Image (cartoon, rainbow, N blue to C red; front, side):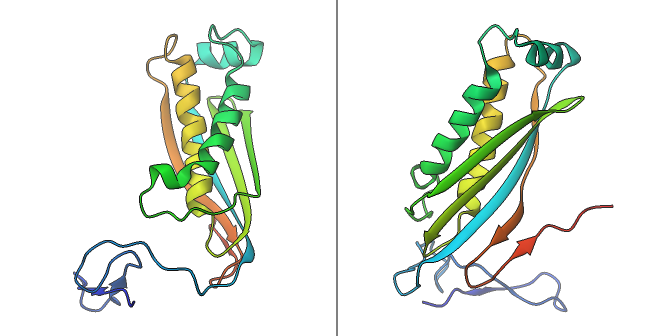
Amino acid sequence: MTAPTLPSPDRAAPALSLTHLRADGAAYMVDVTAKHPTVRSATAVAQVVVSETVMGALRGGTVPKGDVLAVARIAGIQAAKRTPELLPLAHVIGVHGCEVDLALEPDHVAITATVRTADRTGVEMEALTAVTVAALTVVDMVKGVDKSAAIREAKIVAKSGGRSGDWVRPQAG
């Protein structure tokens, strides 16, 4: 089924085609049955901005709820595997590898997740789900001492495999 072409507000710009919309505008799950499994990966990043007090507690391992980074890492891995339960049009795929890393920067916790599969569709949503749930876990574990903790810039920074090939987010600057 062909996705509809939506009218563009700027007539000079090419029309946008969304793959999860039928010609009548109704949402549907894209059929990937005919696609051949290929090795694919995606990497996403996010940040949790916290106070100096929380950064010190994270560095010293003194957050009252325990090992924040370890719990967030496991939460991110679990989230990647459960993405289709959260996103209604995401396919159930085999998550064959998932790495979630958290690093303490001067004013924030940096989170990176890389998800891998050998399946019919990509793992961008799994990588984004991993970093956002890991970020939510950090916020949940520090909110008692820092109500201002905030998540920022969850985004895909690289993907490989599939029909569209490899892509790396250009560096801003």
